[in-house]
Length: 438
Image: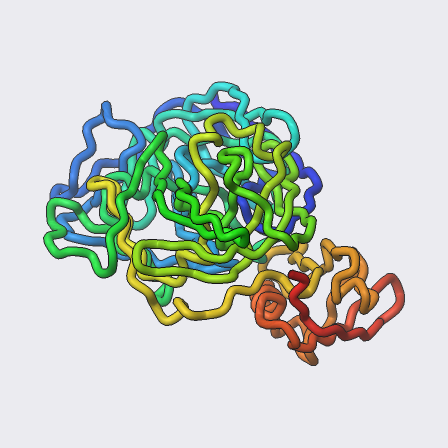
């Protein structure tokens, strides 16, 4: 007989997406094996002893997966053990799939489980989680995986749906990529998975060797710092990180902070809050391509010590870089191909407003201020936490999405922002100009 777990909400502060996790008022039914039907006769048949393996259910050379694109993150459809379609972030920085947030009324049946402790970025302690075995995943009618492991967090520490303004139930990564050649077409909002044995042409762009370690992809490249030092670094290729680049000072004494930095709250990891600094990097090389004078993140030592094995990498290469390319990940042959797209020369901007906005009820046009940084443009204009936004630049919230706030706040210095907010019984109007603090 299956057991029912109730997963309760916790509070959170949030700035950048480091790894997306959320659980809110969820019911998960745990039950031993079930028969969900057989693959079609022309499918790639997965032997029962293979775990965590996706395959095509039809004799196709390739399959397209559309994704929703929010805050530099890719969100794909996924069904677990015959559930209704849920949304999962596609994150190359994650090896084992995670259930992280089922909305009210949603449920999913999972197979045999045991309790474990997990650890990740952050300055807090380990988390309790359930590890479930033998689950079936369906990304579409053409892509299926049997015998999958999945983690279920038992604490709500991220509220990812609220931060993204849409319902998101978890994260999946390595299992989707490991057996295919995967093209990420950011401009077209789709991923194309190819069977390696049927993919004969060379992918577009330059090739960089891809290092796969413990289910995660890495590249080795060079950075140049403000002191003029050119340094070789090993970076995790992380589609689940919305920023451009993160560098770990503990991993190499040669990695130093830029002369001018700002202290900041970088986000939330599995093991707690992530604090650090933002500063400008002179350049990052990716083969023949070079990005100059952009903002990088430098997490502090307390946040990084929690990660086992973090010393084997020097940082993260995030989606704010990757989105500027047609990306081909060839895990079977350990290769990464990059071809610039229309966003390649687009300027780098992070949140220049100093305020964060969330959607308390994902999918509804209701927006609340969740964070205001001291001495920021928003703070100087009088914006406060818990203010309810009624209008943004003259547009009522009924016509807005959370992405509209993100795109405006990340646009360019000098842009004017006008807000109408409700604070208690007061309706207030205020304005400020976006500016670059470093």
